[in-house]
Amino acid sequence: MPNYFELFDLPVQLPVDVSLLTAHYQQLQKQYHPDNFATANDNDKMVMVQKSAIINDGYHTLKNPIKAAEHLLSLKGFDVATEQNIIHDADFLMEQFVLREKLEDIESQDNFVILDDFHSEVFARQRDVYKQLLEFINKQDWEAALNQIFKIRYLTRLIEQIEKLQEKQYAL
Image (cartoon, rainbow, N blue to C red; front, side, top):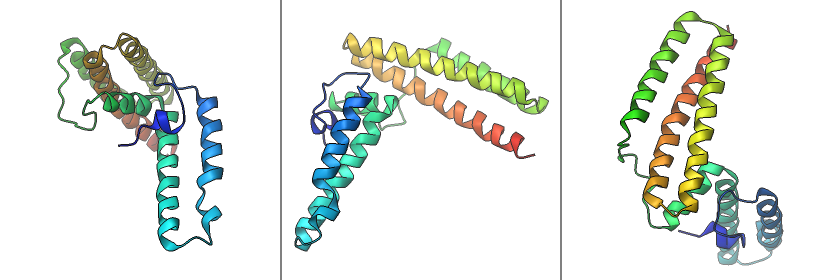
């Protein structure tokens, strides 16, 4: 797996400096863009297309705060792709249960304002969990950081459900 921090000559830290990331991305894109190799042989063209794809993937990964954290943890040897990891935080799991029940209640009320407020509430909760993630990363408490990633995924799925419901309500 490529180290995107190295690729963009960035320090291995979060949050990522997006302006520096963007500047390095644009520089690399100019250097390795496949159009610059139109007269090259097929093998060299393929290499440049692959390099350009890695640059694009790295940019989009590091630009997204959650994906950047996942990438950092994967560089530390953690399997962030596995969905089989279990959250052992009973309070968090209970909170998720309550939030999902609340979403079901809101859905039956068919109220735009309540749904929008709930979206803001869950989004704020996700931000709090992300802040805790950064704290664990700064302390190099990788296990706790990984647990925060899994919590963020729970909240992300809930946010996606809320947004689908918003789209459905607004389409009426």
